[in-house]
Amino acid sequence: MRLIAWNVRGVNKVYKQKEVNKFIVNNDVALIAILENRVKEDNASRETQKIATNWKWCANYVHSSKGRIWVIWDPNRLEFEATNMSSQAIHRILSIPHLHLKLHLTAVYGLHTIEARKELWEELKGVSMSVQMPWLVFGDFNAITDIEDRQFGNPVQENEIRDFIDFIQASGMTELRAIGRKYTWSNGQIWSRIDRALVNAEWLMTVAITEVMILNPGILDHTPLKKQNMHDIWWKLKAMKKELKQLNHIEFRNVGEKIKFYRQNLQDIQTKRGHHTQLDLLFEEEKEVKVKLEKWSLVEESILK
Image 1 (cartoon, rainbow, N blue to C red):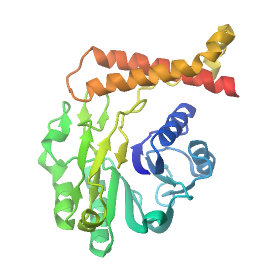
Image 2 (cartoon, rainbow, N blue to C red):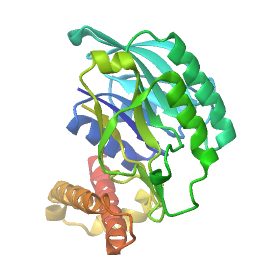
Image 3 (spheres, rainbow, N blue to C red):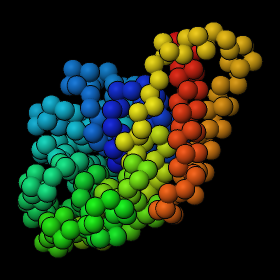
Image 4 (tube, helix red, strand yellow):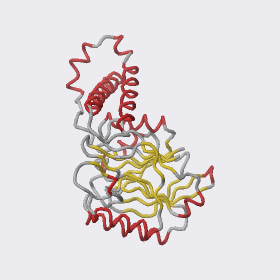
């Protein structure tokens, strides 16, 4: 059973919903925090069910109409009690009955400016002074803590990291050791580590998990954080109708194999790139594979309808 935080910008796209659903199934996910979903509140219930049927969900629409944070969980495995939320975080009590364990969980999606994130740091400091159980804070902070957290782009300035470090020190939080990829976000030219997981002392004493896995991003520009901007290549189904008509029955039967092949191909390429920051031919190869994977996924979707 795993807890996931993942920035899935624009998750109302059918293709992204399919990939997230596949990820949930393949990784034994019991709870996923989806950040930057960009789904209107009126559509949220319908769209969450496409990702995880019969799962429960909560969101912070009351504080942000833009659809910044969803938390979706399997009610057959977890209980998730409301506590508080804001425009940058959702705080809830997570109960895992079969482990007789209660945790305080905070899903974060930080705003994009230093000044706007000051409210987040103060909010988290306040929680740290009152929480008396194991506490996990994870998500996309849109902030870094070290000059090594960004490669290329503008040089890291001291004022970019000061507030985040001050929060960690004041609250006594510890960042879980990250394994896997070094950076959690990239646009193909700049690499940053802005997604992470923090825990308090009670967590370290109570919960055996002390690592977070940074996985390959797949079709997205953010990596998922797993506990033990994707380029605009979206294709309209209408634009594919002519090609679909030309596909014969043998190709239809092979669609699933093509999707499986390109998924694995994408994972292999991203694993190679994950340990290197220099630009190389793999970047162009990765873009081509993403286009092919999306194409065949949409072909499969149209066949099933």
